[in-house]
Length: 74
Image 1 (cartoon, rainbow, N blue to C red):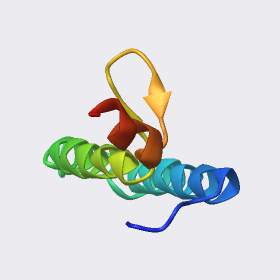
Image 2: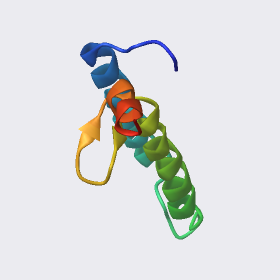
Image 3: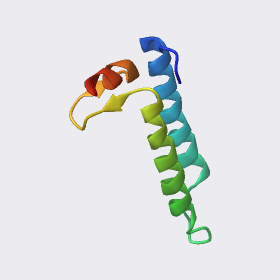
């Protein structure tokens, strides 16, 4: 993503990721017959969680826009 995102675009994208994880929890309910569902939920939730770095970055303490984070390297 090379274009600068507005705060609203970032909020909506992150909301969508959370909504995808919520939907995933509805789809992958572990049961005695489907014990692999918990692993499917975990793997997919982690994939969605990794997508957050498309919108914001962190140094482990603070959040930065992509542009701010690039400027930290200078």
